[in-house]
Image (tube, rainbow, N blue to C red):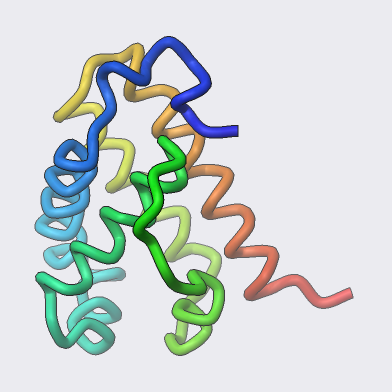
Length: 126
């Protein structure tokens, strides 16, 4: 299910996600926990922002354009579950600052689902 299924579809757009992702990374790169991981792992910020914005446009609106494997991309880095919690804190602040509450809550909920999925894929061992 995408957010497009809700009545919020008119407020969503690919440029909105590009702005959100750019703002998010501006904040995350300054974070003492996440900043070093992003600086070590991202070599072309414009490409990375475009890729992540396309991911969000697909995850939230069902728009085509993202080609990748988020789990494989995250496996390349020395991540901890706490980093995902911090990522969510920064994402939530970014979303709250840029969109109305009726749109912010579904975007934050989607981020929590994505983070939990990645954490399960990275850290769960049966």
